[in-house]
Image 1: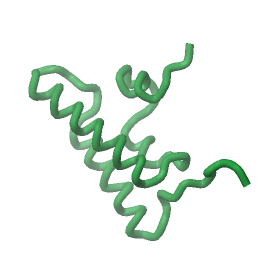
Image 2 (image 1 turned 120 degrees about the vertical axis):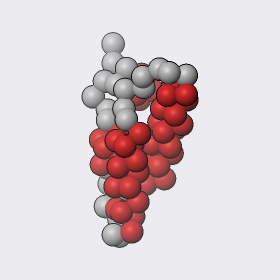
Image 3 (image 1 turned 180 degrees about the vertical axis):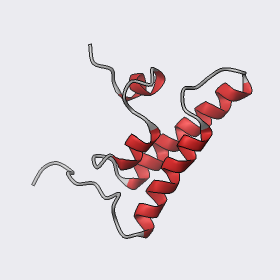
Image 4 (image 1 turned 30 degrees about the vertical axis):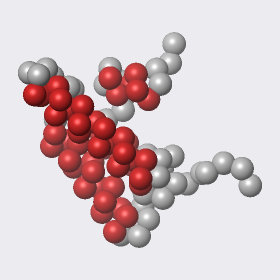
Length: 84
């Protein structure tokens, strides 16, 4: 049974913060939303003394990568939006 995005994030699966940042199927906004949620979840886990699976440095590097892509003019643009 294939895991959805949330399942892959929760179980680490093959979806790392940098893979989210480099995924051409997400817009920059979607990437930042996902990574922001990961950062919040990681902070919550850390506050409770639990391991999250990704370091805050990994998540911060992925967020910086997306922001650089936007500043550089579109490396983070969605390649396929469906229809037409």
